[in-house]
Amino acid sequence: MKAVFIHGWSASPCAWKPFRSQLAADSHFVSFADVNSADGFLPAVIDALPPEPTVVFGWSMGAILAIEAALTSPDHIAGLVLFAGTPCFCSPDRSRGWPVRVLRRMQQQLHTDPQQCLLDFRRSMFPDSESDASAELSRACPLPECCGFSPDGLHAGLDYLTRTDLRPSLGSLSCPVLWIHGSHDRICPPDALTEVPPSHEILLIPGAGHAPFLTSPVAQRAALDFFHRCSPP
Image (tube, rainbow, N blue to C red):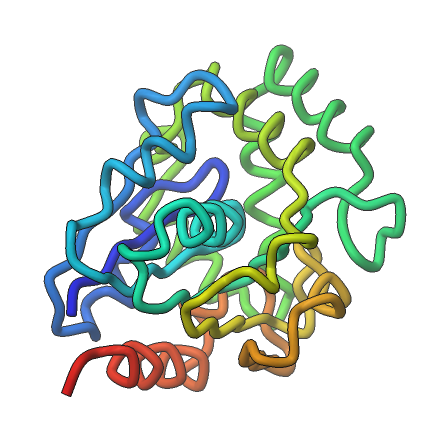
């Protein structure tokens, strides 16, 4: 079974390296380097899918795109592992998502101080208890060198997050789905998963932030076990 990895906003494929090293599979990494509009993200994912059924690992914005890819090209998807994902990033209820005005403010900051905008977002991924993982991500994906987005792509990514709401479509997914979420995720709050269908699996990692595939051995083992369950005998 092959695996496809989709990273989140302002990150790059290098973020997957520590987790990917544990997976003995033919892996493909989605690149957003040439995406400059909100409409360009899903085609970039579809283009990266192998012709045979594949398990897709999505993180944050990558999780939303993984769901869209499974809805658009179900014959290519054998299963979804969604780290720190949400079917709808924006919400007026801060316990379920971010207000649109916050993303608009980030877009303004990308014009005036892009480095600080990216650093602030990255810091918000980790609670204080995960400072070691924050440092590990900084070493593996230093900013701005390892931001897998162009300046226009960063703006487009925030547009994508602002406008995308997949909650009405979740029940149409035909593949197995595993959501792995940190209880202390400040970017995609756990309450965002209250509308996930009961047929989906949810694993909540106590104390984890926005990158449980980096910080939690429990999350890593669960994702690997799910991958093998989705693989043909």
